[in-house]
Image (cartoon, rainbow, N blue to C red; front, side):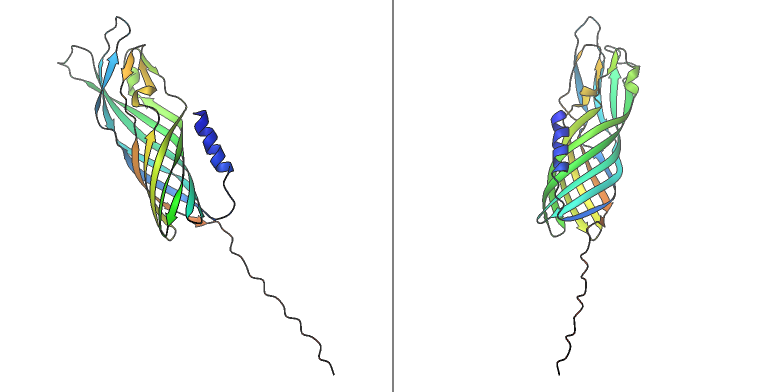
Length: 231
């Protein structure tokens, strides 16, 4: 995680002052791409663990702003987005199939800073880059489980791919975020080992409106001097 933060700082510090800068608000809507999957639990004690499954995620909503710099055939884009999404889990005590599993919801609110760089041609752009996530709020109903522990880190990271299209000041982006941390990395059931090699990756479509920050050059008229006529 320290290397990701250092990379983001390096990119921001290395930004050139040339090019066409623009800034503006941005909203996005998406979904969690990972579907339902069983969570394998390897017990490390005499306590029998529950039967758990990941059920998927709901819609992903973001709002924030973007800073865009067009440099020749390339571009650099930095965003700051407040993002909300939820994950669903099911749990059932081993051997109690009559009552059926119980569903638990885990709500996340994060601040994500995606940085993308790539090429642009006419109205299209294609880029990749790192994503830094900072946890703001985590409200998990899994706390109702016996021996539950919250093991989520304050900071997480990921990598994104972005395809964009612009019409005047309107910007439309489609991006896919691959998270470095797994779904079960954020909690533990005692000292048992949770096995699910999947991440809560997300895909979203965003709409933004940019305002050009570049200063137009103003031509200063040159006053012509009239030479005195010689007689």
